[in-house]
Image (cartoon, rainbow, N blue to C red; front, side, top):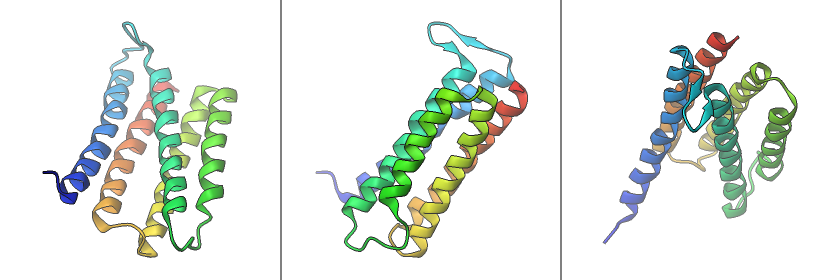
Length: 150
């Protein structure tokens, strides 16, 4: 029978696994592999994956708002929607190099929201520590890709 601890470990494992496409796509960009067979442009794949993950993390914040007994000092309902919608608008309207800069900013902002929630004792230490590590990996991957692509 699965215990709660197994789900916590799965949660952390999936968080780290979610950073792998950022690492692999960034490595492809750095290696000057501009197109992946059957998939398309590596920089576009990186941008789209970032869009999906950024939207997902904003959705996590919305879920935290809905599940919270005390709504706290962060207006998660508003911030989650603003982040997700803004990210989609920026993706649809800006050149890829500008979008990647915004994406880096969004991932850092989402992490800062989680750290504030941690300080309010609404998130666990292991989760926040993992978020810091994974966000650092993601931001570095995006930054390297942006630097090489520009």
